[in-house]
Amino acid sequence: MTDSPGIAEMIQVTGLAKTFKTKRGTVEAVRGLDLSVRAGEIVGFLGPNGAGKTTTLRMLTTLLEPSGGTAVVAGADLLREPTEVRKRIGYVAQTGGTDGACTVAEELITQAELYRLGAAEARQRCAALLKQLDLSGLEDRYVKTLSGGQKRRLDIALGLVHAPGLVFLDEPTTGLDPQSRANLWTHVRRLRDELNTTVFLTTHYLDEADALCDRILIIDFGRIVAEGTPEELKHRISGDLVTIELPGDRDGETALSALKNVEGVRDATLSGKTLRVIVDAGGQQLMGIMRALDAAGVPIASIQLARPTLDDVFLTLTGRSLRDDSPGSGAPPQPGGAAGDSAGAANLDASDPAAESAADETAADETAAPSDVTGSSR
Amino acid sequence: MSLASTLRDTRLIFRRQLRLSLRNPAWLIIGVIQPILYLALFGPLVKHFVSAPGASSDQAWRIFVPGLLVQLGLFGSLFVGFAIIAEWRAGVIERMRVTPVSRFALLFGRVLRDMIALLVQSTILVLTGLIMGLRAPVGGVLFALAFIAVLAISMSSLSYAVGLALKSEDSLAPLLNSVAVPVLLLSGILLPITRQSAPSWLYYLSRINPFRYIVDAMREVFLGTYADLTVLWGTLISLGLAVVCIMLGVRRFQIDSA
Image (cartoon, rainbow over the protein chains, first blue to last red):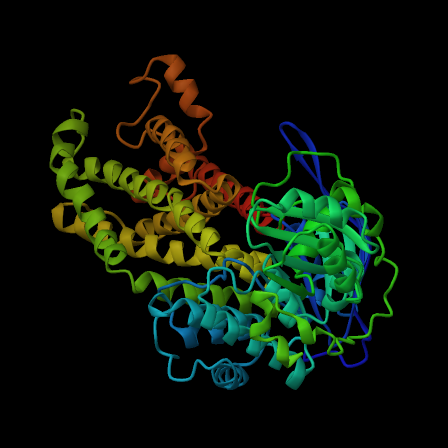
């Protein structure tokens, strides 16, 4: 019932598909998904709303029957032994799943007993989890009186009552304030570091994936469009980002055309006085850019080289921002194709499972705002 | 899924649901007052209305109280589906469906709570009836309560199934109302539908309503007759209805609730 030490591949999915029949026809929510998650990994499953994240998660947690494909989850076959899968995994849904009129301890103990723990063992697990998730002293509080962060930690505790080897977290920090989010990240990391729990989480916060995950899978239109460590994704797909501030807005167009011919520059855009230039990774292009601008007679107020954020990666891959809630315009799924000038880079990564969690500290010059909060801990 | 773990799971769900209900004062107060109100507001009219020449007012009570019991059972149980929609929305159903808990227990633990609640209400109703003038054999009353228990199981299961299928209070309310009221009238709860009293189309319409047989059987046992065809039919139809409704309910807890 506790974690399954012999399993190296916690999730092994081949060709997983889900088709929904609606009044307007069939919708392919997930189309032939392949993915694998090793024991002890924290894997982030990213995608915009409607990309197939939650559908995939609901299939992997036995809530939804796949239309096609096979999956082995925590060592048990998803289709043939769903009950076995249920015993071995924990799942924390986006909405949580507690009743406000229950007390914290009642919910935890009932949940433990639903996982077939004896009454004494259930009370013991309840006490341990209250401590583990900083909920001590709240056991007799009604759930409806908890703060957002406390309630979210209770939700997570409910998914962990049977000490599963694999836990699924669906958008664990959505709706939480920044402190609670950072706090929750600490708890998720501790799950892996101290208990060797494998964590599979969905999020649409790129900073969260960046800060928390060993590996990221990006899903769009029901397919995996990229996969790798956050560093790899940023490194390989988007190149680096040079931001140039001009003293006035007269020289913008001149600067743009001057930059077009610089070696290693992939793309340049202008908004107001700010030039955003995407260059091949490495940082050698900075001198070339400055020379070109100098030759064109464009003065520079400031220049800055930054590693791209995962937001930039996502934009490059899917042609839309992850924060954009509108699920595309029904455009045919062209993984990466919509990204125009960098389409060629889109499927660079899909075939590189050898990505050790090698987030070596190349992020020294990382100025990307949202991710530096916890960047140091990686 | 062994029988022992199914029973254990059922007990767990039942305990949780009962605890939640008992914490809700509105549920308790309304639950107690409702049967008394039914009887107090309508009962005084009965003896003048139903008593045919030669029949005693005592007999009127024995026709009226079983009907009220079925009405209480129908309306009390059919509307539990609203609660399941709220639970579904809070994510409770999904959270439990990811555990190895028996799907039957997810349904039946809740249904048992509803059944107990209805039996308590029915007992209050019968006791109030005794005070007001009902006279019926103890065995008959117990037999009738057994009918009510089975009816509660059927209607709660059905309501949970429909509630989870619709997932919207706005659709559930008109559906239940538009079904429950005709069914109630056609079962002869308020006024018995007999070959003599009703036009033949109404009479035959009432014969295809399963509740009619249950009401008839309950009136029969209230009169002290336990072993005749009316009681047999009522029993078979009650049990058959329960089996079908439980199957529908369990199926709903098994399949996707996306």
